[in-house]
Structure formats: structure tokens, C-alpha cells
Length: 408
Picture (cartoon, rainbow, N blue to C red):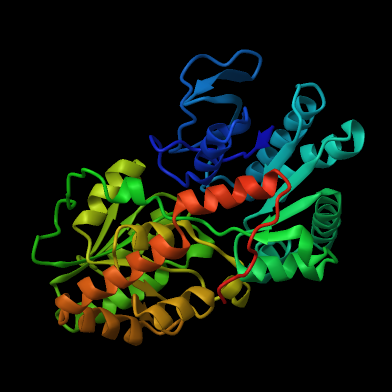
């Protein structure tokens, strides 16, 4: 029984980690029931009507239960909390009534762990808990949640989730250390980061560019959520510097949706940043085609120290899977990797001049960009191949030891 509120298949727009892990579980002889909500821009693979608030069907061998609980990054804080709590409550009922042998739950949100906790203590089921972001540490560091009562309650839920789980998965070095800091023994934790879908990004693809970006332009892409955590004003700041320098040949493409997209578009219009192009989200396969004609992928986050080692962003792994050099604008484990492997540019946070300088440098060294991209792809194949990581995932689910050494 696999709980992931934001489950998406490759036919939707969004991260497909849970789809890939479920498919690997099936390939290794398991059956999987996936319990999820309805995400904006995503697709679960089901299209029938909801009956009593849910619909159910087989999707590529996965038994999917989709709850009629829509979610969007653009939702208000109160609406998102209501959706998270609603998903946890309805998932708990499923966890207490369905037939299964092991329960797995993945964040975010942290409330995803509630059905696993109940299955562990009320039904005696083995429970594996996956942590994609440290809560409440990240919301506290970002200032998104300041109410001390809510932070205390989240801290209690975090502690209970970790202590209830027989095994825990962290997606980055900082997440693993954060779990250990809550008293979980290291031998119960495995680091299994997000992976590279090499088959998707290196198949038969139709390369394309959005209208307004010429074939000769240096096209620099950010593909992901336009939310508070993403800090995309840094891209507009750099674009303003490039415009001032007259570099109309460098185009910055922001593809996706999110709470701050309207304000980012308004700011770009106010500053007349015609070197910034906004685009709606696209499916994974369509994104792979875009990557074929992209020069650089942007890994952008707000300058929050908790992000430096505490995130494992899907977009970074998509970029290197596609053989793109990466421009990263915050320190941490990914910036270290970029420097060590010479697979892109690591610039300091909150420094639009350094950001613009790196892009101008890139525009003048197209041959080196290709070499950087190949360096990144070698790392993708050696360390982050989704097939390799999903096998490690299933080994851990099955109770086998895995290599938990983390690149830092």
C-alpha cells in the first residue's frame, strides 16, 4: 500500500518518482495499491467518474485509488492545509480496511505519514517512510509557518512518523542527517535521491523551442514550480542585468505553474524583460523534447540555508539526464557536485551580476557547454540512473541492506 498525495504518471506534468518506484516493485514481483489525490497539471492515469469521492483502476499495472482532493501550489495556505488533512484522514480509513502486507508513505506533506503510523500500530504492518523535505524545519526556515502551536504539532508528528517506521528513506544528505538528529539509528536510514529518467530523455524525441526564442539564442530553462521556495525573482534580476548589457541573444524560459507565476509575469512585464519567456507546464515526454534544444538548465531556489543540503530537486536530475549543463544559484551538495564534475556553473545566491556573468560566459563557450553536458550525463548514468536507484529502493523495502553512502 503506497501513499503519495501528488502521484503523477509520465503523461502528466510533474515528478514521476513514485510511478517509477511502483513499476519497479511490480517488476520485482509485488503488487501495488497507490493512494493519491488529484494534482493540478498532473494525471494519475484515471479518467472515469468519482464515486463517493474516489475512483479506482489499473494504470500500467498499478492499482490506483485517486481521491477527489484537488491540489495546486497556487492554493491558499488554509486550503492546502485542509487538503492535506483531508487526504490523511481518508487515507487512514483505507489503511485500516484494505488488504496488504506492507505500507509505504512519502512526503510531502508530512501528514502523509499518518496512515502509515496507524497501519503500524493498529494493524501491525511493516511501515517504510520516505522523507522528501524536512518538515517542520523547511517551513520554519522559510518563514511560511510561524505559529508555534502548529510548528510544535508538526514536530510531534515528525517524531512519531520516524519512530513508527521500521525503515526510513531520505532523498538528500541533509535530510538523512536531519532524520538522524531526531534519534533514528543510521542503520534504519537509506539515502535514495531522485533519479534520472535516461530512457525518457534520450529516446526518439522531437526537439522544439517556444515561440519567441530563435535557434541561435542561448536558451536557458527552468522547468518546475513557480512558488515561494523556488526564488525565481533571481532569474528576473539576472535578466534585467542582461537586458542592460544588451544581450538579447540570451533567453530565459520559465516553464511551469505556481502561486507566484502571476506576480513574476507582472514584474517581467513592468521591467520590459523581453528576454524572459513564460510557458505552461508540459508532459514529461514533451519536456524531454524541449531539453533537446536547450543549452542550460537552471537549478534555482530561494537563499534558505536549509535548502543547501536538504533538497533533492527533480529538475536537476532531468537536466543531467538530458545531457545539459546546469546553472545552480545556491551552495550545498548539488553545487559541490557541479564543481567537482565540471557539469555547469555554481554562482552565489542573491548575486544577479554573477548570474548574468555566468550566462554571458556560457554564450561565448558553446563547445564547452556540450562537454559539461556530457560530464553531467556520465554522473547521471553512474550514480543517478532511475533503474539503479529503483532497484535499491525495492531492496530497502524488502528488508535488504543497501549502500547508504551519500555524496556530499
